Image 1 (cartoon, one colour):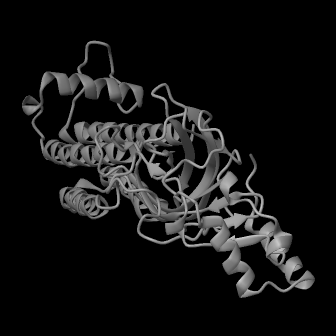
Image 2 (cartoon, helix red, strand yellow):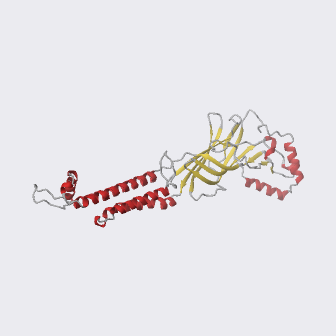
Image 3 (cartoon, rainbow, N blue to C red):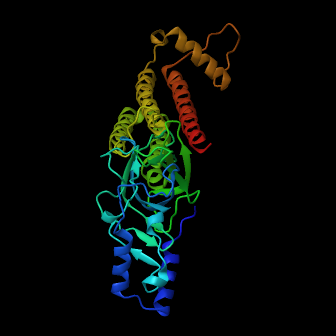
Length: 389
């Protein structure tokens, strides 16, 4: 069964008006003849042993919001339904060439379709508004209730802000099993004739399908896939994080004699901590799965704390002149570093190198500088590889 668009019905009506003007008396007589013995409580099938086939079309009007924490999606949509009621057929020639009429929904049998994964009240779609059905002379009834649908949608924010979210809406005529009523999808995709795009989300997929469940119900599944626009979050979160991470190890380039190493490293640490507090409101709060960007930011602030500790240790060794106050392990590591850098060459193999505090500071500065940059590079590259692959 294919859905007859309202545009086709309007063409019928316009052509009708040119052939023969329809009077109020003709429409009134048609209404009287159709509904004198009509019973809206009875399923509109000529053979009650066979199910009524209802064609369905899902119309998307707008994507309103997506809440990652509550795992809910809100959109404005309508469900177009069409079926054939044998009691509503007429000969247009007997009624002034009336081919189409619109009536009050209270006078007609209408199927109620429910969003089963709805998060608010369990009411039929469009129950808060009166939608008028259209009847064609062939007995076909067209009814399109709609409204704001708020459904449950499991989320995956691990790749935020480069994430995509997939939500599945489940719609069914609650109370009518397959032996009474069968749904038939008119299209394999949701219709976007009235769709208004969202500024933060791009609609990638909007497929529809009918599944006859084992419990005996015919269910319409609407699969929606949205992709987040990452530009705002990239500029406001990712770029400042990269700036802080690249700026922090430069503390070890600053001369110890300036006396500003510890204060600079502490200032960067506090600045990044304040920044992390401010942007945490923009990052979805979820534990399963957790946002990888947040994990990367915590790892970078941990490295910033290590840099503060390293700058203090490095400054402490700088002013040591007596080698007796230097530990054996630190002397050994410094000797290895000095030989590798060809800093000191002993006169003979039995002469011990003289290690000063400044030598240890230079070794520690090199170790912390390159070590922290390598860690930061691994964290940043790991994040981008995860979200982009």
